Each structure stands twice: as C-alpha cells, then as structure tokens.
Amino acid sequence: MRFILLVLIQVLILNNIQLSGYLNPFLYVLILLMLPFETADWVVMLLAFMLGLLLDMFSDTLGLHTSACVFLAYARKSVLRYMAPREGYESGKKPNFRDMGISWFFIYAGILVFAHHLVLFYLETFRLNDFFSTFFKVTLSSAFTLLTIFIAQLLFVTPKER
Image (cartoon, rainbow, N blue to C red; front, side):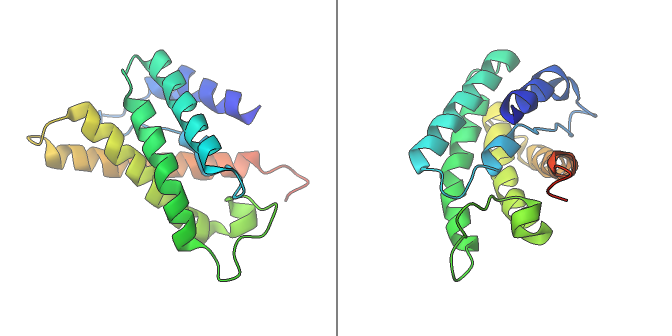
C-alpha cells in the first residue's frame, strides 16, 4: 500500500514541484531505502528497476529514474555492510527511524539519496560544462528529499509503533 501511495504522491504532486529548478523532491526513493535488511539482492535490484521504469513512464524521462534507482539498489548493499553493527542486523528490523535510530537512518539515507541524485542529474545534464550548477542541484535536491523523507517517516509511524 505504501508503495502505491509513494508512487502516486511522486507522480501526481512532487513531479510538479520545482523550486527555481534546484529543488526537486524525489520521495519515491524511500521505497528502496526502507526495504527490510533480509531482502535478497536480486529482489532489491528488480524492484528498483520496476520502480524506476514506472517513474520513467510517468515522467517521460527515458531511463533516467531506472538508472538512478538501480544504482541506488546496487550501492545499498555496500552501504548497509559498511554501517552494520558489530553483531549484525537483528532479524525483523527495517532501516527506519524507529528500528535503527535517527542518526543512523540519516547517514544511511543521506549517502544513498545523494548517490541517486548524483546519477540522476548528471545523466540528465550529460555534459561537464554545467558541472558545478548540476552539483549544486544535486546537493539542494538531496537535502530537500531528505527533509521530505523525514516528514514521511514521521507520518508513516503508526500509533502502535509510537
């Protein structure tokens, strides 16, 4: 249900928000960020491909979202391995505020959102003439996306979980 809700919010609302061309929120990456730790790598990659393809169809972006999502899914495994506690991840836990803590989640999400945006915006621009303006766009959009992810995390916590 959250998958459909996040895709609809992205396609119907957030794709139409561009504040001065530098702030583009991409909340849909939360779908990939919050997959359980135990999710098989091939499932994460397949889901990333399908999610990116779905966004590309609605956004008319010819594979940009697909490429960025697959890159995020590929990088996710390395980031999770790098950030793993000594005793490993507990079974049944998910990478979210409640299970892993706010600071852990923001480092995890920040790295992956920045990587996603880096691939997305540099493939979109596809020239080095605009390197610094594109990097500025990546940085601002990543920060704005992290803010929307923070708000979504607060909204998705059920009263039972609070």
